[in-house]
Length: 106
Image 1 (cartoon, rainbow, N blue to C red):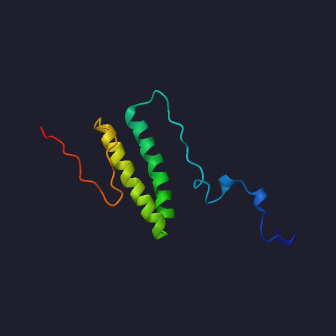
Image 2 (cartoon, rainbow, N blue to C red; image 1 turned 90 degrees about the vertical axis):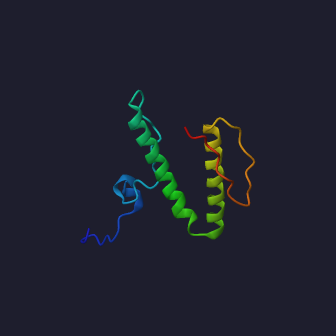
Image 3 (tube, rainbow, N blue to C red; image 1 turned 60 degrees about the horizontal axis):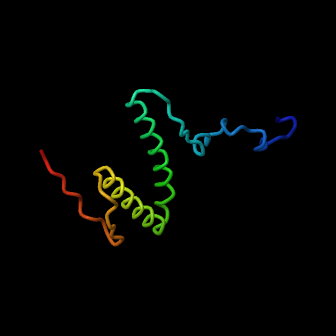
C-alpha cells in the first residue's frame, strides 16, 4: 500500500464485523427454544441491559432527554409492577413518583 500511495482503505472494502463498533448496532433477539429457564433469563437480562446501556448513554447528555427517559422508565416500572400484582394500571402522577404498593407479609 505504501508503493501505491494508499493512506486509507475505503469504507466499502471493510466489513462491519471487522471494526471496533461491530456490536454497537447489532443485538440478537433470538432466544433458544426448549432450553432451561435460567439460561433464557440470562439472555433476556443481557438483551435488556444492552439496550438500557445505550439508552443511558444517549439520554444522560441532555437534560430534557434525561427527564423524559426518567419519567417514562418510572411509569413503565409502575405499570409492570401493577401487572405482576394483577391490578389494572394505576393513575400515574406525572409530577412525581407514586407511593409504593403495600404488600402483605407472611
